Image (cartoon, rainbow, N blue to C red; front, side):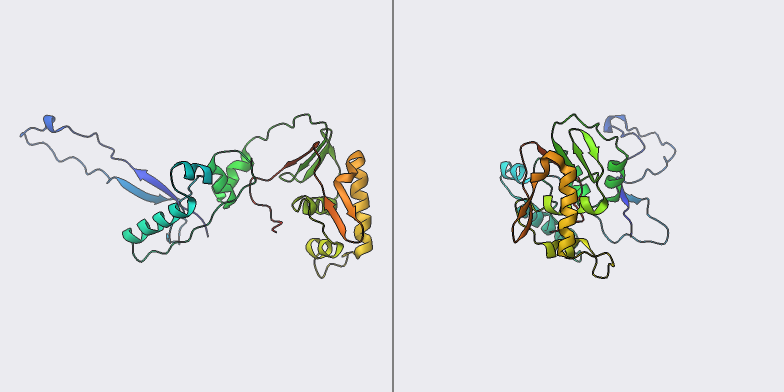
Length: 242
């Protein structure tokens, strides 16, 4: 399935003032296209089945306008039903990490996986890394920086770190890490002892910041953020759902 775009059609001929109308007959002007909307970029062999309207507004802005997100959604659904009683509606709220920044509507489009927004985001030049005397866990680019130097983590080492970071402050049992990060039929699936080995190697690469990954004796592991640790979240939702 794909998305089409809506184009607004504007009259191509100038608007004539009533004062300029005369009784002298004139040749019929070609009909101008009606003002309205049309679909473009619809692949051949397909048909339009509906549309998506991205609305960018956070809860604070809605409250300042004397409403809330739920009321806006219900009003739009009522209007749609009035215009086309046979229409079906579905609403989804886009969530983003606090302080993510950016325009609300752009964040919504990325969070809801709008292909055009994702393609644009990938093509945008990335900001250069600023010097940061500490740890940067960059979930968007899948990398770890210490004192602004990239640390070479294996795929599984970063997956372990990301799993703990996204559950900050919660103790994660070894069996949960195995079930979440290794497939059931994986021949290299570790046991609980080998999880300890993976964590030990990860902590060695964290060097003097190794205590951000804490061992909870008899329980598992936990990520504790320090003041010198920065986490860069992805603009789009992480596939690591929880």
